[in-house]
Image (cartoon, rainbow, N blue to C red):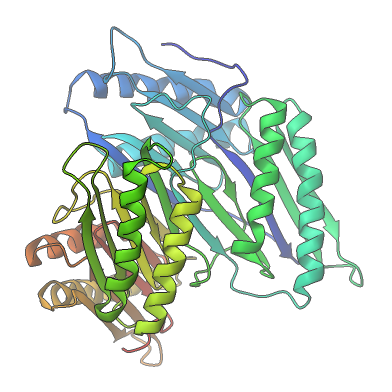
Length: 463
């Protein structure tokens, strides 16, 4: 086993803010998880070394709140995994150990044969990969969530939140634990307070920690402008302390693969493909295409999908925003994907058409009171919608189902990208439904091939 504590890795930062009169947090379900990379051979060298790595992180992390290592028991690329675990700076050793154990168990169950995976809980996070990511900022997987409630004075609140977080970013960057938390009273109220937290992995240099936290603070307006709280999660940092979905910012984003050469053939083809998808997708809600010679890292494949109930104009607006987002946030990545409330966009240097993308993002809500009935009704509705979506030309279905209290309903949506066969669409949706967590009054599960969503309020235009 090899491990390192040098100031060179950029895996995880945490900032959070919230306007709270009273606060109590406890999340038993992951905030988010992601599976990617190729599959490893069951019981092969990679899995054996991965098991050793999980054991190492489980024992190493709780003592200090941070663990980093790689297994090298005779393994060579591509059978050597690298991993990292981080607990929130205020979490006890016991709670840290519990969280890392749960994270390790969850990620092995949810990504059983994948060479790359990440999972975030409120108390900790864990990541492993067959690629050495130590010392590199992970700009990949990203999703946003925030409190749907607005503050009464957004300009004032935004400034106060920024002031607090800027102070905490500086404090975190110079403390041994690279963690800082604090609060700031708002003027004109004895009870209203903005709370914040900032954290970096302790193998990061002071300067890099501060730079990364400052960059995250600069992104706040694009996700959480005027909101009472918010959260942003990527492979490099997490921001947040509330929940909600809107279409003004991505729900999920991912960058992967090697970098392409700036102004090279791949980028030229990618720009052409983005323009093609912008024109093709809005009229029907779906666009698919590839451009370039069939040569490695020259030809680019892509698709754009709009939610089945959105208008042509809203589809065009969303695809435009999605293109802008991936080109800005994945400037040189050979592969990228982004999902908004109204649309999704994906491109790759590999031909993925017709194949089920098993990498996924799971986002859930607060607990529901009568979970058994709600869970059963939700599964009935989603299974019905999955069947309907798989046989319709748009591969989209939305509907509702009354709960025991006839005044309350659960609303659902199921959709596939239209490059899938009907059977693969059904298979993709069935896989997502099997992962719907129990006891949550709403949720969203997204892959690059299909997605499902369920809520206790109507969130689509036509049901």
